[in-house]
Image (cartoon, rainbow over all chains, first blue to last red; front, side, top):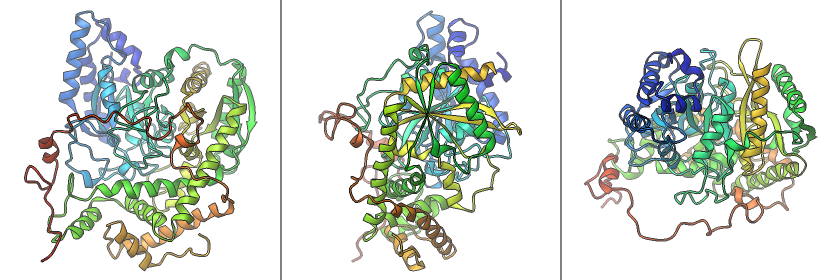
Amino acid sequence: MTEESLASLTIDQVRNAVAAGQTTATALAEMHYDRIATADKEINSYLALSRERALAQAARIDTMAQRGEELPPLAGVPVGIKDVLVMRGAPATASSLILKGYRPPYDATSVERLEAAGAVLLGKLNCDEFAMGSSNENSAYGPVRNPRAPERVPGGSSGGSAAAVAAGLAVATLGTDTGGSIRQPAAFCGVVGMLPTYGRVSRYGLIAFASSLDRVGPFTKSVRDAAILLEVLAGRDAMDATSSDVQPDGYVEALKQPVEGLRIGVPEEYFGEGLDSEIRATIEKVLEDLKAAGCEIKKVSLPHTKYAVPTYYVIATAEASSNLSRFDGVRFGLRDAEARSLAEMYRKTRDAGFGAEVKRRILLGTYALSAGYYDAYYKKAQQVRTLLTRDFLTAFHGVDVLIAPVTPTPAFKLGEKTDDPVKMYLEDIYSVAASLAGICGISVPCGETREGLPIGVQVLGRHFDEATMLRVAGTVEAAQARS
Amino acid sequence: MSGQSGVSIEDVRRVAELANLELTPEEEPRMQRDLNAILDYIAQLNELDTSAVPPMAQVGEVLKEGIVHAHGETLRADVVRPSLDRAEVMAAAPETDGRFFKVPKVIER
């Protein structure tokens, strides 16, 4: 195994090679750290490395392999964690100055489950501050560059998680998605990114942005790897009251089932004006591939789609304004030491600690929740959220999954959209409705533009039906390999 | 929503105070401009008649019974168990006496 071959390394390859004694978990971790030391200078995907913990875990896995014990599903697999998820003792900044220096005393449930399944935790990954952004340019620790085109953004907010997988700086990573923050960067960087159903994966240990929308999900190099990770991550957690006790399926096993006879919905509202012509043509090819695999393609309508972005920006900012009130200089992170009163300390700490986009969203959310505006903005948006969710529930009466673009355009250039918040928010136009409705989704690479920029396609599935979604995603991926 | 667009500088200051944010004089006009642009965009929600539509706060509310339980049923058992270690939590605080978080004086005498 060479450093170059890391870029295509998958979970099964790691586990099998470690089990067969062809390599060790320790050697693999070191190879990844070597590659990070060189390649990540430009990409800037890692904010902190957890070398000691990673190598201790790798040594445990190597001992198991030497003794011939059965290895857990993620044995020796080097993974990275988005820096909004906490890891005991490792810096947790959420890419914000306000949490600089904070080292939480516990693990997020998703982190704990990965490690219990044998994963080697390499470190914490860059993202937009508090996961607010679509380009990773809102990080207090510098932007991430797209490994496929360094002058372009990797997408956001989980830009570091997508870039690390694309550049072979981790075999898989965890990201979070509140309005598109897994699916969009996955599409921009040419990797697989999955949004599990709301409640499928525990949010315990996720630094909250918008609690009714936040979800944890994996970035991987293949659909199969996404299925493997979901099996590890899925399931009820007593520490998250919104985690569901709906029994997870055998997602890897489900991939073996043929897709013949499945009904694929094509929502007309997702193929209108504003969609890049190369992305449109590429997704039409995906639909042909699915038809050739025996799926039935049906037109459907999700009539309230155009209201998804404004609805999202009311609900997400309202929840954020409440969640982010905990960053006040009292319990963790930054404090303005000059302030003479408590109120002054709160204000000065928050002004120094939060970046412009975070302040903008806190102000918008506070405004939407303030006396006299609550019904006009917040309640109204919650009502439209019901309509958007009903759109999906109605569509899923007639079809098993939906196929849609992930983004209106391929990865844009750094600085291209930073001056206009509404323009940046429209980046989420194909992703936020699924976030509001709580359904599952996945972004799968399905081609490139003439310039060589990756294109992703989105497969959206019913609540808790990740199995069907993954089967269709696997078929899309297999068709790519053949063409 | 419609007809009230036009957040003033005073509105920005009032909301910033509610949010415990202290904006610099340079930040205020920029935030005013951005908030107005975003609120204008959000105003399109008024095209929809939602008078008979229930608001949705959580995903579970709109799913049928048996998919997600109603309130209360998914709460964990109310039993006493160890919480985070106090020393570890306090170690992360900007100022502490080891037992409590310390803050600047709250009440002036």
